[in-house]
Structure formats: C-alpha cells, structure tokens
Length: 114
Length: 113
Image 1 (cartoon, rainbow over the protein chains, first blue to last red):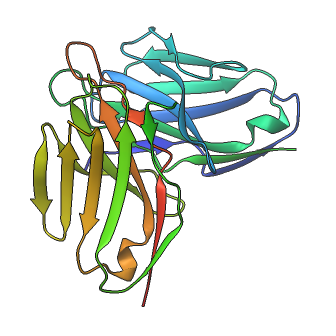
Image 2 (image 1 turned 90 degrees about the vertical axis):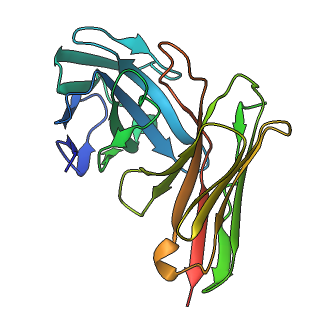
C-alpha cells in the first residue's frame, strides 16, 4: 500500500516561530511537492523537487523554503511564521517517466498561526 | 484567465441523481486530464485519468474530454452519499520532464439521502 505521510495532522504556532513540516514517501518516487490549500483558491504549489538536493520554486514560494536531503523525505520550512500562512499544507509525490501524471498525496497538515 | 477554471459549488443533489462536474482549460498543449477526489480532512486521491478526447468509464464514473472545446467533465451515475467530497480536475501538459499538473479549484459535491 503506497503511502505519503506527514509529520503532524494539526499544528498551532505563534507568529514569528520557525516551523518545520515533514513529509515522507515510501514509493521511491523522484518527484515531491508541497502545496497549500485554501478555500476558494484551491491547491497552490509552493515548492517542488525532482531529485535529492534539488528544488524549484512553485507559484507561491515567498516565506517558505524546502529541504530534500534524502529521496524519501521533503521538508517545508516557514522561516518566520505569519498569520497569512494559516492553511492546509499538502505534500505529494510522483514518479518520473510515463506515469508521472499521478500524484500521491499525504493526509495534510492543518497549520494555524496565531 | 486561470489556465483551469472550475466552479467551486457547492453542488447539492439527492441520492440517485446523475452528477455532472466540469472544468474548462485554456492551453491546447494539455494532454493528460485527471480527476481527483478529496474527502473531508484527507488528501486528494486520483479517481480517473484520460489521455485523449472521448469517454472513459469506470463503474458509476465517466470522464469525458472534448479537446476542441477545451472542456472536461466527470459524470457520476446513481450518486451515493459516500460520493460527497470535493472533486478536483487536474491537467498536465505531458512530454519529457512535464510532471506538474495544473489543478482546478475543486467542486464541493453533497449527495443527500
């Protein structure tokens, strides 16, 4: 059973804190993604990675950074959390090649910044 | 104009109804057309995908693509309360190195008994 796991389902942090969201996949996928999902705005891509130590900015990278030191793990970092980063964060992975159309998502982390 | 447009709903239907969910897109380079289903407090899961124009059927679900109109649809027959979820269309350009889908905003579907 393929699986993408995220370190927390719910997280409450204070403004200015550094926040780490962890994502692990067990499918040996090359590609990994971080999205945020907000009502009325849908899924928005923050960062993605197509290989270990490689990262690319998505549509809304400001205020975020990422780290991919191992193939199975992709971390999202909020350097200084702000209230407008309160959101649902979803991690996804996909394989390279012909079947790359399918993304496998984790259950999400609902982050509240107060 | 967003590359993929999808009405967020909510769409409320009685059990047993035929449901039609739709997306329009603007880029004719898109080749893969997917539908994801997302239950409350869960991540999206791939429901169906199609590569070309025409229909693809899987049980009560039918995905339809009309490339000439840049319009995709998901039909659900005999809808059940368990079909209540958010349905996201996703479209991919395809080709070497193209693996980042463009998602619609999602349509919230409520099937009431």
